[in-house]
Image (cartoon, rainbow, N blue to C red):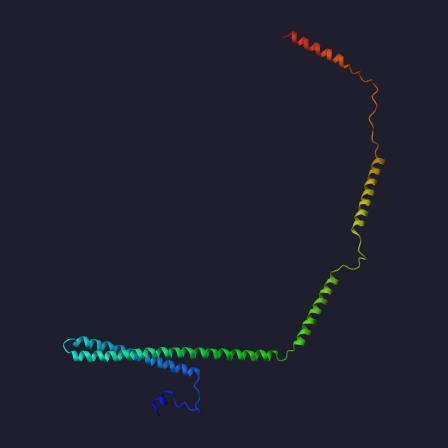
Length: 221
């Protein structure tokens, strides 16, 4: 089997397609493997850098070989960084697709359940039922209104006529009381005086008396 066959499987037409969960798990395993490779390369880069510093001018050949290996490791590290970014993007896209698939599956399941619930329902029957309910409610309200009305008291009366009649009864009662008081008690009138009333002095005589009193008072001063 070729290298690509080992990595990606046979990929024949009769092969079973992996599930989204399996593919996501494969990608996570690959990310973990590449992350470990990154750690290894970073350590190798540090080692080669120390080797180059160690030899320095003493052994330029060894120092140059160490720097060359360091460059190769850095190149591999950059390639792994790009690969990890691609795998991470693919994994996130696959996770989103898997989430959308589950959401659509659940929505389809709910739609089937709703369809089954409405299967035995007829919109015309529902309208008839609601109309019957409305009519029964109106009938119940009419019955309640009829029960709440007073019965057995004959026709309605004019309130103004009743008030006028009440005023007449009160006036008759008042007149009756006044007649009873007048018949049972005799009101005594004041008698005419028998002695003659004293004559009122004329105004001129009163003025003369006043002048005399004033003169007498002035002489004493």
